[in-house]
Length: 307
Image (cartoon, rainbow, N blue to C red; front, side, top):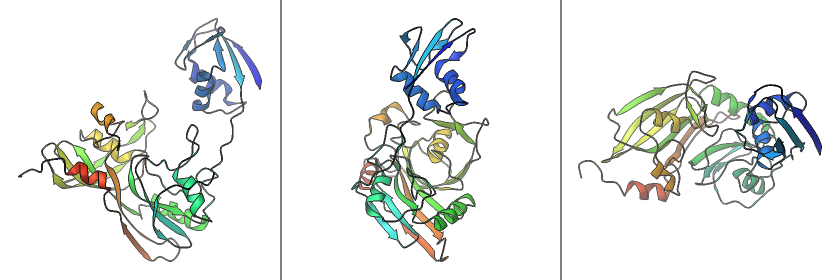
């Protein structure tokens, strides 16, 4: 373990941001890793423990116990999920609610990747040791269909197809409020939320263009069931776009309402349909995943308009 001491000669703002920038040249630690060092009391300011948000002042002395990050590797685990399609090049899984897609710091096991390693002998290597075969992701509480590549050739082609909008991805969502138009397009750029790193937001700053098309399937007294077809694949795209038009996904703990955080199922958002040409054989593949029981149970709690 290496120890480092820094004596400040000016005010420098937030501790975690300063240390991330200061250590980047020699260590290239991520901001999240620096925050973990602070939270584990391996960073002291004036010999006192402080929070990651501590504002550094002229005259402060920072002492750091530098630990090398531990390299994570994914281990095979017997995880329950359904494989709805499989051939020698790819498979499509039906991801259950609550299952994280791949390991990360603070979440090293119990993921879809751990389960894939248990069930599948060969997965593409492009995603590295923590994301083997992962072509695209679904949020932890989003259910439904997801493509996994079994070799690098199919992975590269599928990635190109995603970028060129050649994979039809259709979702079903249950949202708050009554959406009046029968269909619509949401075209709004998405970037990282300035005040909360866990969230995304509509912004013109460091953002990427994002397009979501929606169609009303059914209206209830205070809710609407819709289908969403995405032309881009941004993080939290559907959730952010629907919150932006004031119709957040029911149960969404980040973008809906406080009462939604009490719903253990999470957001009622389901990857319902995938349609694409096979990346190697060019064969047409079209798959549908029916709504989970909990999703239908939630819908049946609402009174339909006209009843």
